[in-house]
Length: 151
Image 1 (cartoon, rainbow, N blue to C red):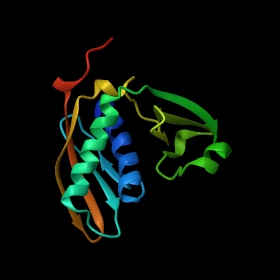
Image 2: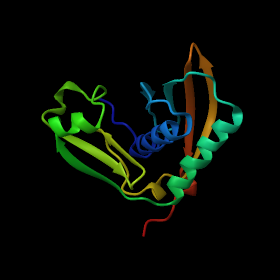
Image 3: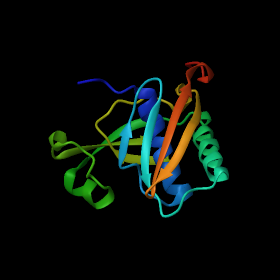
Image 4: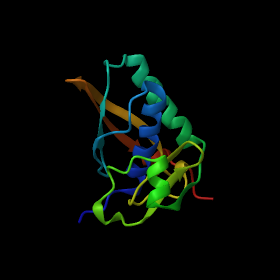
């Protein structure tokens, strides 16, 4: 099985929470996360304006620049079900659910790997976006040269 890049995967978490807060849509229902470029698909009631897309990019970069800690906690499946949607977790996730937290900004059940701090991501850039049949697809990249130096 191919390993997902921890930088892009962490950026996906931040983008998802930003989408929830900015557009009021749910987290992505489909994602393709790669080291060089990634995409996420969201169900939207109406197409966002270009200004909203720019605001999403700006907010993601604010969270990255805040250099928040990324950590994992665990919950029982029963407790996790009360707080989170577990539909995207693989069957083998078991009865102890790992919750990945990006500072106080985002919390999400996840089995993937992540960076230790958001400042390690670099600059986030939405390269293209489009809407078809109420599905917003956002394609993005990270400029890792803009990442904060390790402390």
